Image 1: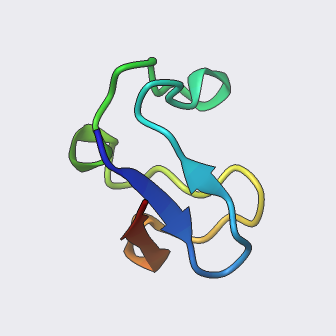
Image 2: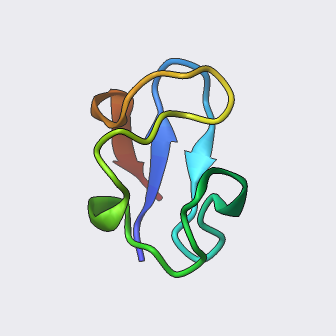
Length: 53
């Protein structure tokens, strides 16, 4: 699965890990993350993330 980079702070969302502290279970693709989810480090929305290697 593709990882996504927060362009505001550099946080990387890894679908294999998810964000369980904020209700996103491991194995959740970025597309399936709720639209109201925000970066756990800086608080920006999903629209501030881009795919990364």
